Image (cartoon, rainbow, N blue to C red; front, side, top):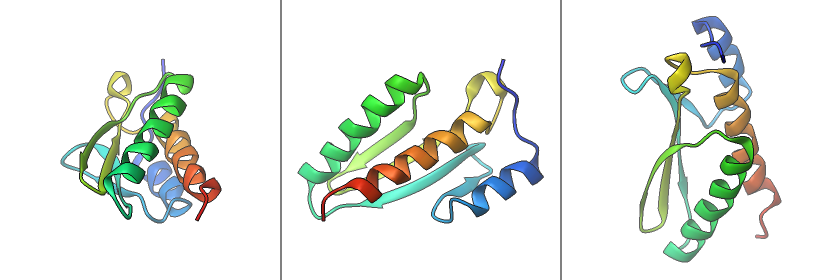
Length: 100
């Protein structure tokens, strides 16, 4: 079973993911992504869905036109785990590889 990160471990990991935030109310890490239009936002969501399925770790998310909000938490661990940190990093790398 995956273990929940201690607060210090979570904060240290988030220091390497500066655009992700700890949301204490959700017991998760979250990030909002903005895109020029709905099509690009949806294309990003499709890429994230494929990545998450491959990793076997699925985000909670929402989409409102050109904005995608992703929330990561490991429900089995009761909070944020290394799986969430790893998936957040992979999601960030998707954007780095995206064409301009």
